[in-house]
Length: 223
Image (cartoon, rainbow, N blue to C red; front, side, top):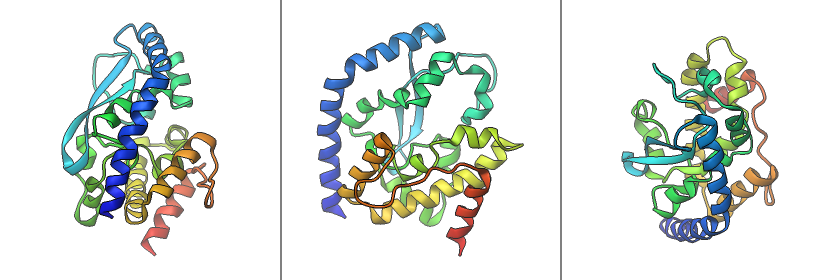
């Protein structure tokens, strides 16, 4: 496992460095259109929980307008705030590109659990806290499974309850499964699946398309 972690770290740093060199024009254009559409700084910076439970500032392209009042970390509850440009950025995951800077700084990895806000990461108990032994990732198995997360949340009566009782526990189980079986080869395959929607080495992950699929998958971990 230690050799894997060392190889993963060098893969992340070198890959993100060249990724920034190649993609900086796209990141700049994304920042510009996000700034115009939100009438504010096009970068969205938020405190998240990373390796070892330490906080860091995650960087994304801003897809929502600033509003006064309570803002939820659950996107479905902020639907009215998403700009038309933001919808495009979110659809093609372009809003995630600035996280290459988080990777090159060693705060994130290309592959791993998505970084949580404090209110959720604090709920991890027992073996579930093993997730905090990993650098959070731009993509991962749970990210692919929940590619349609916003649609799933919009399909249920109470998005917050469904997120807290089904989606978050299910992501935790998937991320734990990843942490116990991760290799450089599997990481590379998850990156390919994120970009091409198919696996080169194994069975492709099929994103959840309904709330019942999520519930059934969570139940399978209890068997």
